[in-house]
Length: 127
Image 1: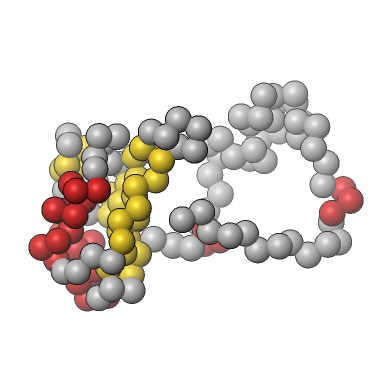
Image 2: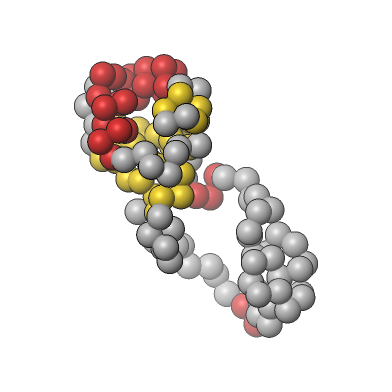
Protein backbone atom coordinates (compact mmCIF):
# COMPACT_ATOMS: atom_id res chain seq x y z
CA UNK A 1 0.00 0.00 0.00
CA UNK A 2 1.45 3.33 -1.06
CA UNK A 3 -0.01 6.69 -0.13
CA UNK A 4 0.52 9.45 -2.68
CA UNK A 5 0.40 13.15 -1.92
CA UNK A 6 -1.34 15.21 -4.64
CA UNK A 7 -0.67 18.92 -4.26
CA UNK A 8 -1.31 22.20 -6.13
CA UNK A 9 -4.87 21.09 -6.90
CA UNK A 10 -7.62 23.46 -7.98
CA UNK A 11 -10.11 23.97 -5.12
CA UNK A 12 -12.82 22.68 -7.48
CA UNK A 13 -11.14 19.28 -7.98
CA UNK A 14 -13.44 16.45 -6.86
CA UNK A 15 -12.91 12.87 -5.78
CA UNK A 16 -14.35 11.79 -9.15
CA UNK A 17 -11.71 13.89 -10.97
CA UNK A 18 -8.92 12.18 -9.01
CA UNK A 19 -10.44 8.73 -9.54
CA UNK A 20 -10.57 9.34 -13.31
CA UNK A 21 -6.97 10.55 -13.22
CA UNK A 22 -5.50 7.65 -11.22
CA UNK A 23 -7.75 4.79 -12.45
CA UNK A 24 -5.75 4.07 -15.65
CA UNK A 25 -2.69 3.25 -13.54
CA UNK A 26 -4.32 0.63 -11.32
CA UNK A 27 -6.52 0.00 -8.32
CA UNK A 28 -7.26 2.87 -5.94
CA UNK A 29 -7.69 2.08 -2.24
CA UNK A 30 -8.90 5.43 -0.90
CA UNK A 31 -8.97 9.09 -1.86
CA UNK A 32 -8.96 11.78 0.82
CA UNK A 33 -9.32 15.41 -0.27
CA UNK A 34 -8.13 17.55 2.64
CA UNK A 35 -10.56 20.28 3.67
CA UNK A 36 -10.27 23.23 6.02
CA UNK A 37 -11.71 22.36 9.42
CA UNK A 38 -13.48 25.70 9.89
CA UNK A 39 -14.78 26.51 6.40
CA UNK A 40 -15.11 23.01 4.93
CA UNK A 41 -13.46 24.22 1.70
CA UNK A 42 -10.82 22.14 -0.06
CA UNK A 43 -7.25 23.11 0.86
CA UNK A 44 -5.78 22.26 -2.53
CA UNK A 45 -4.24 18.87 -1.77
CA UNK A 46 -5.28 15.26 -1.33
CA UNK A 47 -3.98 11.79 -0.54
CA UNK A 48 -4.54 8.83 -2.86
CA UNK A 49 -3.85 5.32 -1.55
CA UNK A 50 -2.95 2.63 -4.06
CA UNK A 51 -2.52 -1.00 -2.89
CA UNK A 52 0.06 -1.90 -5.56
CA UNK A 53 3.42 -0.10 -5.14
CA UNK A 54 4.42 -0.56 -8.81
CA UNK A 55 1.15 0.95 -10.02
CA UNK A 56 1.54 3.82 -7.57
CA UNK A 57 5.05 4.44 -8.91
CA UNK A 58 3.76 4.59 -12.49
CA UNK A 59 0.97 6.98 -11.48
CA UNK A 60 3.48 9.20 -9.65
CA UNK A 61 5.84 9.34 -12.63
CA UNK A 62 3.07 10.03 -15.15
CA UNK A 63 0.98 12.52 -13.16
CA UNK A 64 3.62 14.71 -11.48
CA UNK A 65 3.40 18.04 -13.31
CA UNK A 66 0.24 17.05 -15.21
CA UNK A 67 -2.26 19.85 -15.75
CA UNK A 68 -5.69 19.47 -14.10
CA UNK A 69 -8.17 22.31 -13.69
CA UNK A 70 -5.64 24.87 -14.91
CA UNK A 71 -2.98 23.85 -12.36
CA UNK A 72 0.08 21.62 -12.64
CA UNK A 73 -0.29 18.85 -10.08
CA UNK A 74 2.49 17.89 -7.70
CA UNK A 75 2.40 14.13 -7.11
CA UNK A 76 4.87 12.36 -4.83
CA UNK A 77 4.99 9.76 -2.12
CA UNK A 78 3.26 10.92 1.05
CA UNK A 79 5.66 11.04 4.00
CA UNK A 80 4.62 10.52 7.61
CA UNK A 81 4.07 13.74 9.56
CA UNK A 82 7.34 13.52 11.47
CA UNK A 83 9.48 13.36 8.31
CA UNK A 84 8.36 16.69 6.89
CA UNK A 85 10.54 19.78 7.29
CA UNK A 86 8.95 22.42 9.53
CA UNK A 87 7.82 25.29 7.35
CA UNK A 88 7.65 28.87 8.56
CA UNK A 89 4.21 29.59 7.07
CA UNK A 90 1.54 29.74 9.73
CA UNK A 91 3.45 27.50 12.12
CA UNK A 92 2.80 28.86 15.58
CA UNK A 93 6.35 28.37 16.80
CA UNK A 94 8.32 29.27 13.68
CA UNK A 95 8.69 32.96 14.49
CA UNK A 96 8.77 34.93 17.68
CA UNK A 97 5.81 37.01 16.52
CA UNK A 98 3.00 34.76 17.70
CA UNK A 99 2.64 33.58 14.07
CA UNK A 100 -1.05 33.22 13.34
CA UNK A 101 -2.12 33.04 16.99
CA UNK A 102 -3.59 36.50 17.34
CA UNK A 103 -0.07 37.85 17.89
CA UNK A 104 0.46 38.93 21.48
CA UNK A 105 4.16 38.69 20.82
CA UNK A 106 6.37 35.93 22.14
CA UNK A 107 4.43 32.71 22.51
CA UNK A 108 0.91 34.09 22.70
CA UNK A 109 0.66 33.45 26.44
CA UNK A 110 1.69 29.79 26.34
CA UNK A 111 4.67 28.45 28.20
CA UNK A 112 6.40 25.10 27.89
CA UNK A 113 8.64 25.44 30.94
CA UNK A 114 6.80 22.91 33.09
CA UNK A 115 6.70 20.22 30.42
CA UNK A 116 10.35 19.92 29.49
CA UNK A 117 10.96 16.65 31.34
CA UNK A 118 7.72 14.84 30.42
CA UNK A 119 7.62 12.52 27.42
CA UNK A 120 5.59 13.65 24.41
CA UNK A 121 2.48 11.70 23.55
CA UNK A 122 2.28 10.55 19.91
CA UNK A 123 -0.51 12.30 18.02
CA UNK A 124 -3.32 10.53 16.21
CA UNK A 125 -3.17 10.97 12.43
CA UNK A 126 -5.84 13.37 11.16
CA UNK A 127 -7.16 11.17 8.40
